[in-house]
Length: 313
Ligand SMILES: NC(=O)c1ccc[n+]([C@@H]2O[C@H](COP(=O)([O-])OP(=O)(O)OC[C@H]3O[C@@H](n4cnc5c(N)ncnc54)[C@H](OP(=O)(O)O)[C@@H]3O)[C@@H](O)[C@H]2O)c1
Image (cartoon, rainbow, N blue to C red):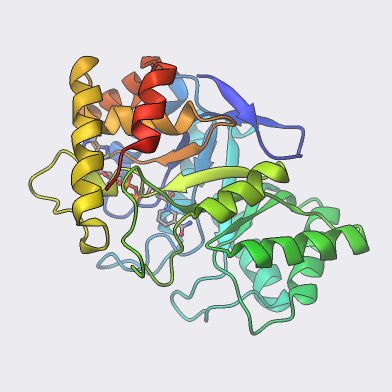
């Protein structure tokens, strides 16, 4: 699997990140292990989890994904060969939403313990917190990095001006800066005013900010839970409309020309941008995994990229 730079970290990461959100909860152990093994066999090493995954699944409290990943890494003895990202900031179980220093330090310890590892390679602020002074948050991340508990930090569900503010604070104080941004992003564009609260969709403005500042972009929910191809998954209302109709037609046309699926074209469209956008790819069946991995070999021409980029009402 190809790699790409993770911001200014100096580290190269896999062009697909594997989303482990439902591993150990909705996806049973055998399925989760199979998806992880297949991703690693395809050359991938960048795995995405969070402290809260997946508290909303019946019978779960959060921490299930990290616990399963820890067991898998121990059984496969591959801790040194994978790059683990986790997150802090959303509410779950008896933990409130927020990025206070106490929350960051306590949750990091819990994540390390659940995964049975000494260091989290990439630790995200999962969602912004405007009630805690940003100074306090960034200083807490700095302490974790200096203690060797975290290697790099990332942001998720942030606005551009808040990223810029964090960047300035880091620079002034010699603290670590966010190397990447993980935001909601797919080929279809949300209608003006559409909300995914508390999630934030990638905007042209923040893409520009990230590119100008060498902040790597990761896209989550790019396949809209399968809605591009599955009748059992309706297109979320936030995307429906004339713009979506035109873009879906372009997507299907290009997919047909390659004998590919719309999902594959979306994954290729993300990774073939310059610089690439890393999809946080999730799959829960062998068929889905095969389809998504096969998109690594799909090459879109410059004309097709242009057609996809400019399609719209
Ligand atoms: N930072 C954040 O706030 C945030 C938010 C959400 C997610 N994430 C991360 O992003 C990852 C992906 O999120 P997501 O689940 O929302 O992504 P998604 O791309 O919208 O959906 C993935 C789901 O789509 C279905 N799918 C995958 N490949 C398919 C294919 N080829 N054909 C048909 N259906 C297919 C599967 O659903 P079924 O399993 O139901 O079959 C799979 O679980 C998560 O695991 C997590 O790591 C981060």
